Image 1 (cartoon, rainbow, N blue to C red):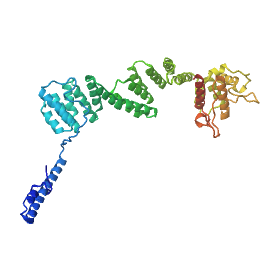
Image 2 (image 1 turned 135 degrees about the horizontal axis):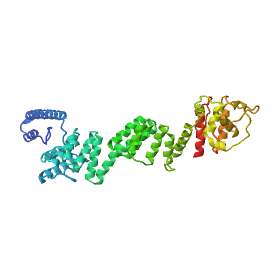
Image 3 (image 1 turned 45 degrees about the vertical axis):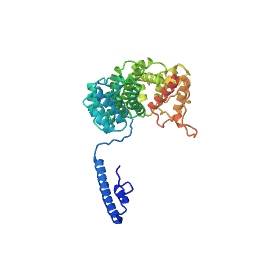
Image 4 (image 1 turned 30 degrees about the horizontal axis):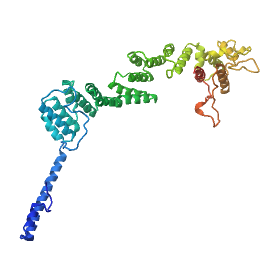
Length: 444
């Protein structure tokens, strides 16, 4: 034991106590020598500590540590070596687990040149935070592809260096060779962290309208597990949202047909305004497929719109709708109403020369639009106001058997999210949306 004081255990002090005849002068002399020696020892100790602090070598902690990777001398496929170096590797791994890295390194040197000894040396470096170990461990794995412990160690080293693909591939190889729950669980943990969690994040980003970021995230997941069908379908969906229908179609062609792929193929057909193909695809899906009812209705109504006469297309594009155009849209988009109501048709001289005469007469006969109560006139060019539109929509709901729309007003009890606010200038597109929503309720 190093003694740095002047207490009873100091040899010099002991001599003073035994030599009672020497007097106080000798005591003072000895005490001075003791202080000088103590100061020199303290100075030397301080210098040693400073030099140690500047060194890069990690000293032994002497504290046991849980090492996540297996012993190089354990597990399936380990290369056969002589018993003496193998015993050294086993002891070295135990010393490493106890935190005695220098002893572990000394024992690893006794097996140097063997796969087990070299792997132990790399494990010691890994435990001390050494970097760039992956190439050396990979070399051992390439030389001994059935050596489970080296693949598992490579997985941890690659994870440390943020080489996700290498880490996951090595973990899978190790778990395939060493079929225990521990190493299978590690593969699952890495897949959940780097693949499944990213796919969940990408789906959330897509739902939030962040399609570009969603595609980047799903690509990161697919780099690690490119054959994951869930990820491929999500990527195809993201591409459709980005307007990359051709790329999505190429991807779907590699997946084969199932309900989700058929659904996405229908979405691609919609992007191309190929409503007939979209209808065929949607009609092949099970009736309880999520979102099918709306998608099928959308395809059918758009297919019908696509084949309407030019004057109907013109009415749809109108920025400020008149009565003639309103009649055209009501009859063209809700043909079933024509088969229901029937009223006497007055003679209307102001529509005789119009190509929309049939639609106007149908709208009048079914009560969708009222004529002038005083004169036999329709006033086809008169602008539609909110009162007229609301009356027509409510009559349409009655004819097709759906609930009448709820109109927004100034009442404080009105819930704005559940009511329809009619703009001051009523466009063709607004009326189309209103009619389509009414018909959709009937389909549902």
